[in-house]
Length: 181
Image (cartoon, rainbow, N blue to C red):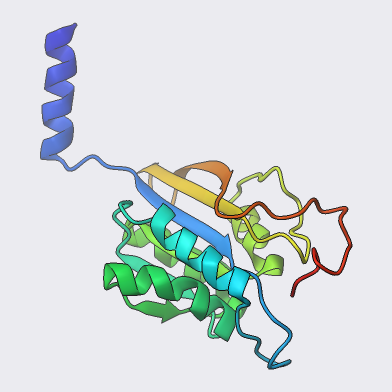
């Protein structure tokens, strides 16, 4: 049995068996200014730093963000620490973008928005426990593991949900402090 395990490990190494991970987050806490394209708050900048530390040794070689200040600023600490430049994606071609990411088979960080993060997971046929992300919820980190391709265009995906950084207030908390935007 031991010999079989060693043989499998050697074969796996020779054919570069690996699992690719895609990390998806909503942007960190945003301010109200400027109204059309807000910056991160101080809490948001701290969360972005926490994200960079959380993902530091994950082998991420691709980073994607929408072209808004809050998403770029969320990705920025990781990009600065890793030297990986941010690339932009558009929400209007989300499914095509996601399959591009999966086909590349590279560990990837995607920074999105409350209305697209869950949508991305559902587009890939995954079933997150969270159905919507409230305005005051910023601490979710979704990890998709691509274990293998099963035939043309088929993927074996596994979803893991966790949180990072300062805990977001409960969704039922509608106080002004909890509703930081």
